[in-house]
Amino acid sequence: EAQVTQNPRYLITVTGKKLTVTCSQNMNHEYMSWYRQDPGLGLRQIYYSMNVEVTDKGDVPEGYKVSRKEKRNFPLILESPSPNQTSLYFCASSFLQGNQPQHFGDGTRLSIL
Amino acid sequence: DAKTTQPPSMDCAEGRAANLPCNHSTISGNEYVYWYRQIHSQGPQYIIHGLKNNETNEMASLIITEDRKSSTLILPHATLRDTAVYYCIVRGNDYKLSFGAGTTVTVRA
Image 1 (cartoon, each protein chain N blue to C red):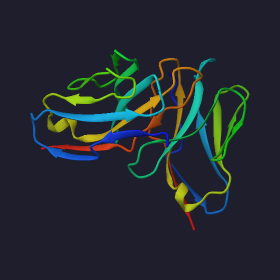
Image 2: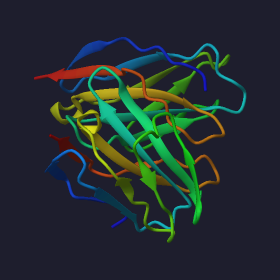
Image 3: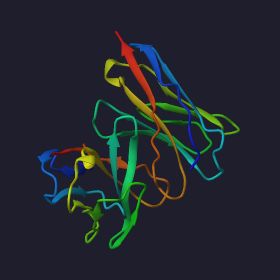
């Protein structure tokens, strides 16, 4: 089954403790992206990647890192999480050609205390 | 990317067609219109997209006006499971999806 898989689905942690949210897709998509969703602010793009080893900032990249060492994986790294990064996070992927739609994962709910 | 305007909410009777409008008056010639929906806090689900021709798939139909300044998503036979927030998005060449507030659709029995 074609899917975008995020892990963990839920995480409660403390300020300053490094964490990684994994994202994996099995559709051979070139494009991958991370969004965060907050009440009243909608979904905002954090980082995106056009292909392996190619990443770029979205609208709200501060406090986040990403890497794209393999085509299927696009982890989101919070080196020193802070409470303002408490949010619902979504990973998405798509082909680059043909205006193909992005497919989203089920989300990761992070709570930073 | 062009901004979109959608009504904040609408109700629909189960079994009836739901017509969701979207205005995108500043859309450019190469920008596509995409529709997604989000049920509760699940991941946004792709519904349909189009450039200038009307489109139909197993989920919905998309009607784009000739001047491309507005579009309508049609759910032909709404069910309770179609209750969700529906997002109309105009996407350019940067692939970024800019989600607005969307339309909260409530399907009532």
